[in-house]
Length: 160
Image 1 (cartoon, rainbow, N blue to C red):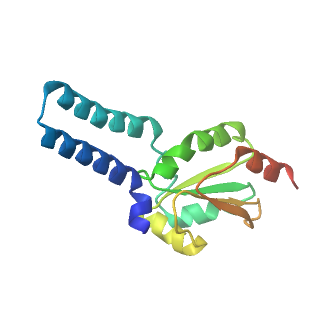
Image 2 (image 1 turned 45 degrees about the horizontal axis):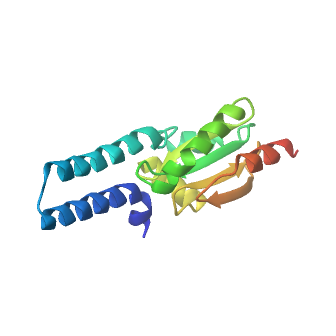
Image 3 (image 1 turned 135 degrees about the vertical axis):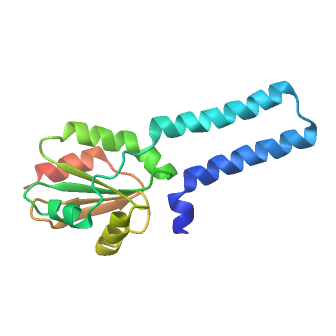
């Protein structure tokens, strides 16, 4: 199940391209149909290039853990670069990062990295994307799986 979650974009793209190729192959290949298949592949590549999540913040789990509770609130994003949900959440995460740059540290943890596996075990992270907000002392305030609400982050930061 975790494999399907973390590699959902690649699986979705592969199934769509394979299904279209099989349908076109059964009907007989024509130039305009090959162009449509190539357009589908280019479309998936472009979508990945535009929407893929940012790389992880650090590769050392100790460094990541030291950020939590260091005096600044931390939003931990547990993500995978090939996850459809992570790609969908990325514009919201970028907006949160821009709007709260002075008052929040955003830690991105890649599920495929060794540091990501250590952090997943330490903070009970199973699915991507998972967002966990820690206060300045390192206490978990809330967590959410799948989507993050910028308003909820702003309200949590405004609450002492």
